[in-house]
Amino acid sequence: MIIANMKQKISESGQGKVAFSLSGGIDSTLIFSLLRQNMPDIDVQAISVRFSNSQDETSQAAKIASQFDSNHHIVHVDNYLQELPAAISIVKLPFWDLHWYHVVKKAKDFSSILISGDGGDELFGGYTFRYNKFLSLVRDDFSVSSKIRAYLDCHERDWVPDQERLFGTACKFSWDEIHDILRNYFDNSLDPIAQVFLADFNGKLLYNWLPLNTAFHDFFGVKAVTPLISPDLINYSTHLPHSLKYDATKNEGKLVLRKLLLKYLGGKSVPNMISSAKQGFSVDTIRLWNNYGHRICKYYLSNARIVKEERWIDEAWIKDHIDKVEGYSNPRYVNKFLGLLALEVWYRLFVSKELSRTDKLD
Image (cartoon, rainbow, N blue to C red; front, side):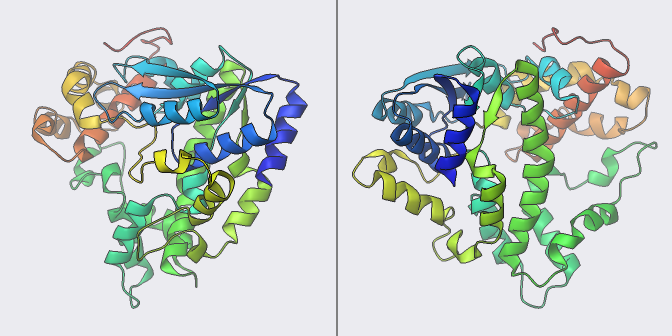
């Protein structure tokens, strides 16, 4: 299914050259190897992203690209927030973690086709840190609400302990509404780990990666080839027993993809290049905050339109935390401030129109 989907999409495009998002992990390495084995004559330009002061995994990606005789291009991003107005103007949503913007922007220089291993984490059990924590928190007698609370505890980087104080008078936050959104994923007869797979698929993939990435593809005129999230693969993976995705005793995920990688590359050294701790294209938010985030957030949020004009966010909460975050080792408050920055940038782009797509955050 993977090979057939990829060959069909590339053949339909008529392209002799393709761009490839290569993180150096299991998903992208598997797709990369299958592409090379089944379409050996195609010109592949591999792309990786290196974020300043963050874990650098581009050396692994470079080795894999070299193994398959492909050119490898590294996009260096120093200030991750600098082009946030440009990225938000494209997706038209207040998200700050828009690393795919840099990948697609580079890909358009080489081809109108961009291939990736997107979807492997959500469909084949890649979020092992979450599964391990969730299973350690839940018991057989847990109610639906208790399982939802445990799931939210596994997403603690997305909310803060005083979340209720964060919102202003015009925005009534309710944990009950959050629970209602998640309830169908846990109010069923599935095993707990399968419920997490279901929630991840319907959250991260369908309402985050797919709409955001699609917006970048459309803007830059790039067609995405994503074999792991083709309709056939989605149907296959969502009916696959969870025991073939995740081994709780070893805390190891993507079991099927690992077997495929060994099957096709058993005689090569590539599997040994893949780190079990690989994070993909990720940025160290604590260092980002210390280098750029604190200063930029303080500039835009000290007189925030989302506070003064709309009263969506509570001014006292911002004042209480913005100068304390630098001392935190936990990125929860940093992530929340970056989210507020994205909301403020979105507002100034689309509502007050004080910012334009070409403005930089320095």
